[in-house]
Image 1 (tube, rainbow, N blue to C red):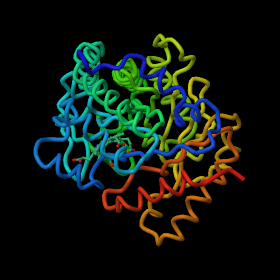
Image 2 (cartoon, rainbow, N blue to C red):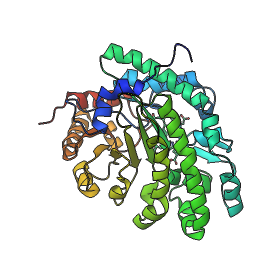
Image 3 (cartoon, protein in one colour):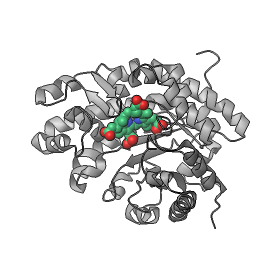
Length: 372
Ligand code: 1CP
């Protein structure tokens, strides 16, 4: 992509607040970004997405990169997160999936039988990499725009790449769509451990390649979203889920680093994970995302090792009166002092109904705050 590629973007963003904090520094200004910062809460997103499907938008490099930039320009956050979805690598390799507005990913052929699973895992995960040019193109365009905006701001702006963890992806594939309790996936762990192992290890390679693709194309950090892992009991999580997540992360961890970069920051996040925080904090990650149910100082105690903590304002506080919201932000920042470093975020994604001005105001409150 002549004229568009900014090689070694990762090296340039080594001094960004986000990368420094993820790797253990405490910059004077705490970095902040939001899960689901791109999307329906923004009128400029709704305008761009008025036509075409969500997956088509993810596979359109010009559109995906522009949507990725929207919240960075508007809110002044310290990083972009790549506009895509956890199911995009599955769509890339030919699994029939649609993102239904107001609902989420829906699979036309849920994996109900061992034969369904065998047929799916026969698809070669290397196809993610082979067909990944559109993703690499979108990442390249985004890092080029981020580099320009960085000059204006006088502050390096990294791109965060991401992928879904094998359990969360399996929960959609086995159920056929969003579900409250992910019972079909939790049953399969016990009904057919061998099929479960085949499916999650296959997903680890599919999703790990998707994350690695984004890093290779110029993302400066990666986050693994295991959104539904909190629904598992800790023994099942450790024995039947975590190994596949570690396998997924290993694809990114194994990448050669550009000159001037000594470590790629990796974040692990899930919802309702209070009982498994210590398990999730494997040696291959640098930061753990915590949802809003566990205060960050308590999360630090539960984790037991000193990595960077990311989180965890209750998204409900985006709707609170200004003094209540500001007090909530300050409480999170103070609790974040318990860890070696802190990246401010919400405890889960930005709700669709949130007022964009409230989100921008949170960024200002975080940026104005100084550790005592
Ligand atoms: O039509 C639309 O606008 C669809 C809404 C939407 C958007 C904007 C979906 C459908 N996905 C996305 C983008 C998306 N998905 C991002 C973009 C970057 C950003 O954060 O700004 C990311 C990181 C994701 C990841 C994702 N997709 C997760 C993990 C994060 C989380 O929120 O827990 C999950 C669980 C999904 C599945 C999914 N995709 C879309 C929806 C509505 C859902 C959740 C469905 C459910 O509740 O089960």
